Amino acid sequence: MTGESYVSQNDEAWAMEMLGRINRGAQEAHERRDALAAAVDEIAKGFTQLGLKPWTLKQTSPAREDMMAPDVLLGGRAEPVAKILRYEAAVNILSAADQLRGFAVLLRAEASLMGAVSVARGIFEACLWATAVIDPTITTDVRLQRALTRRLARLSAGIRLRDILGDGVIDADQVIDNDGQVDDEHGSNRDPATDIADIESYAKGRGWPVKKRPRATEITPLSIDWLSENLERRIGIEGYAWTSGSSMAHGEHAADTASWVELSQDLGTAPAWLIRLWSTGAWAGPRLFLTTLAGYTGTLSLQREYQRFEKLF
Image 1 (cartoon, rainbow, N blue to C red):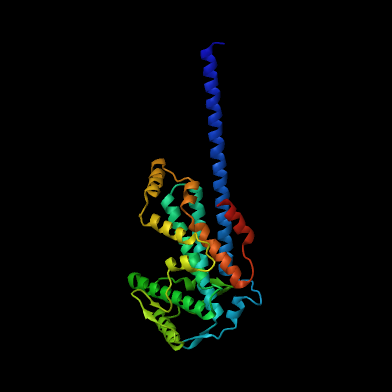
Image 2 (tube, rainbow, N blue to C red; image 1 turned 90 degrees about the vertical axis):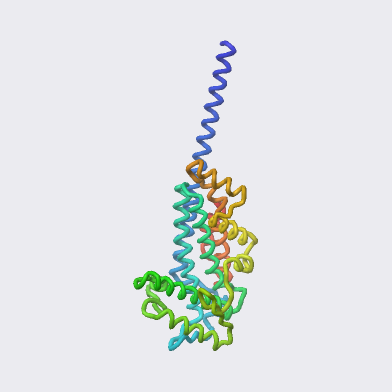
């Protein structure tokens, strides 16, 4: 065998080995992607159940304390505090569930970095709103102030949308089915302007500050920026998750971020590892909500599902 043919055979063997490694690496990456997407789907299914089914409550939990609070008198009707808190949480839990399903689709498709990051940002936001109204580290009254502030924001948004689109606008309140019963206490059969006035009157009667803002009346200041930095069960990643997601969504990219965005365009694809890198909110939001829910109810929910999700993320 000549030296030239020996080198040629070695080069060929090396090339075949490298090709095999690349193929195995691609297969392993696809398997990790599919496993993560399946875990996201599982969390989404669990969130749907948390939004629709009763929660298990320990006797000494803050959730039980809320059940003992006096009813909230709104106009000529009374609403239990626990029901208001549960309902406002459910609106956002179900929103997070739907967006988690969308995130799983985008992971599998590996076609859109910005789309996936924007959905992850929505997951994070919905989870923080849900977390805010069941925060066990604050009093029942403060939880109620937050829930009514969120209801005021939703009612005002519904009025604005109705003014733009006319009749036929469906509010979230009309489609959430709890325990087989459609809750329409503040849905299609009610005037949102009247409900807003009733909430404002109740708040003033309690001596709570009521501030008129450009978009909605506010009983207590609430924003995702503030919540991501101040909710008690945060672990420090929340501020980054929100800020990085916002910068991606609004195109305010740092140099390294811009490079990654450009890379995804050049490749014509968005690998799942790249999506995961910039979608911290898809993990941080559910983590914060489930940790807070455990403190509020006194019981763990979706423990196995979340552990699998966290391990793969």
